[in-house]
Length: 121
Image (cartoon, rainbow, N blue to C red):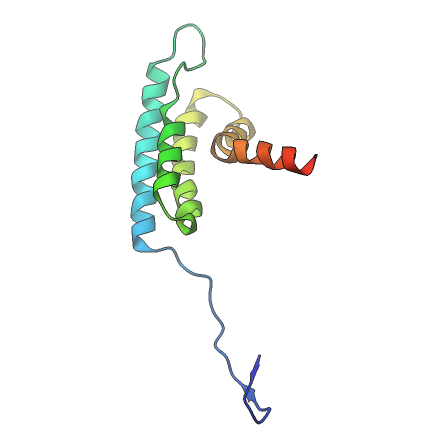
């Protein structure tokens, strides 16, 4: 609420949450596509019979996207990578909770580790 100089209430417009910039949405779609293709490449580089990939390019793609975009876009970029991550990982037969945990760990896990170390000091 805002008041004028004579103490009368001035009607202030209610601000809605900021919608993402069209450039952020475009970047998120591009990151999602690159993440998907990088994950497919990562699965191709898996040494059989082990189900673990020796190289996982989507981590590098997501990190590069986050470093090259403004901080305000990061949530849009992460939301763009999430469907690609789910589309690649879920058909492999892993439980959805594990797949979501991998995404969180790969995208913000290191930051959570650093935060935990600072808090426990």
